[in-house]
Length: 258
Image (cartoon, rainbow, N blue to C red; front, side, top):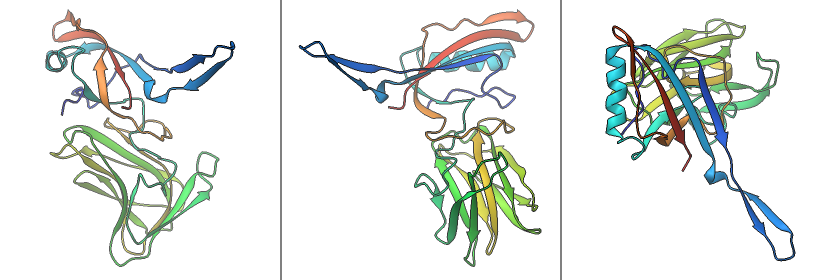
């Protein structure tokens, strides 16, 4: 699949960057002068303007090659929103969007580290490891970070999942953010989540996965940040050489959920 490239630093964008939404309302004007207005969610468009500076020759060439592979604005590609949490329903761990091990029990409404009640208590009553994860259609060669706020009794161990990588984390009885950063593996789908050994339990808040090497501030998500139907807005890409092995560019992308 065509996927917008990461920079060699493992990020998708530089600052400043802009993101906006465009919504559409359908208006039906009746003969008596009244009108009916209805929202048109499928017509929602998300737009990004990414401004790059000091791109290396390698990064500039990769961007130019990708632009040519889409024939400018002609072909669609997958874009991973660099400002978003890629998980769907990140604050609802009991939602069907999550793949839950059969012996995991999940209860919500617990106090979270942000001062709300969006934490979840997850426990494994089985004799084998159980996971809570999502499988996303994203490129395995990307670098990702998976993070979550967690707490449990002293000695509790969990494993964060990022594709084939498993990172063992020891939890404390106070909230702390645990993180794994890894490549997703040689596939076009990647599993992200957390695994509980037999008998383990913990409180969780803020499950997040991002297409970058480290976590940013937690961003609650319902629809996730994976856009499989994105386009370049322009039919030309202007790369400007600013110095030896240094280039700048502005890239405009738009996408919808269809």
